[in-house]
Image (cartoon, rainbow, N blue to C red; front, side, top):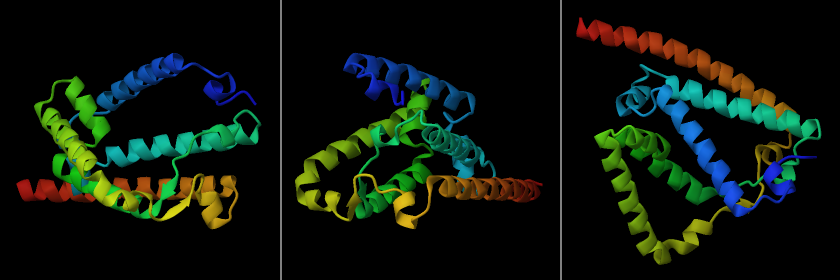
Length: 202
């Protein structure tokens, strides 16, 4: 085992911050090149006229998942040293709902808003300002719903593997199949809704 490198070789905090910064810059660059710093392009996702977000993000997720599964299988990566967020079901559902509504209304998620801000898009500044205000309000009101933030605890490393009682390889294959079906559905939706929009304009 020689991965995760930072854990096994006990990298210092400064090294971790440096790599996080460099990876973040690279991630932001490719998001911008994909057009994800533009709220109009992102909003078309919800009209099923441009499914680039689903295609790109699902591709990234599947690629990372397959890489992790096979690196672990080959004895290169120690998955027990890879950090996973603890599973709190009810806060995750509520937080996901808030995040989704914010994405639909604002046309950005926090990451893409940061990309938009880097390219000086005015709407991204307002979006991030609203996010900061929301964080401030959350922090001030936190004592009133602190108990809710730890409700529905399912464990520190609760994964699909444990939930479905299946091996990681089987789950990876199933997710890959779902991704391929999602890509097919995305292509179908784009053709249908783009043609419908062109008819309306005509």
